[in-house]
Length: 94
Image 1 (cartoon, rainbow, N blue to C red):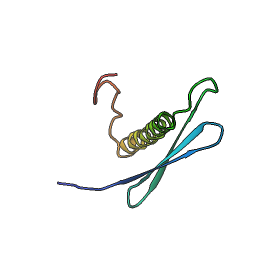
Image 2 (tube, one colour; image 1 turned 90 degrees about the vertical axis):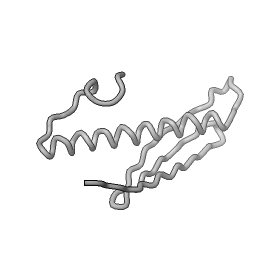
Image 3 (cartoon, rainbow, N blue to C red; image 1 turned 180 degrees about the horizontal axis):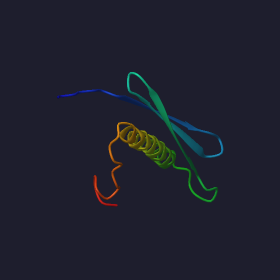
């Protein structure tokens, strides 16, 4: 049975005066919203390059969001009585 869906992700980045960048990745599935969080801090001895802080914080927020989705999928798989996939049996090897 074919299935198509469109989910929207919004990424919000904030930098404070102390060189800390925080990111919120908000996934809207149309029925539920999930938020991933990430942050990055510029060491005082380093040159402050805002793009690097944005990349690190955004990447960490999206990784947090991805882990939430994987955890939910595993619970849903178990909820329908299917066996839980091992990390080595699906996707790319780690």
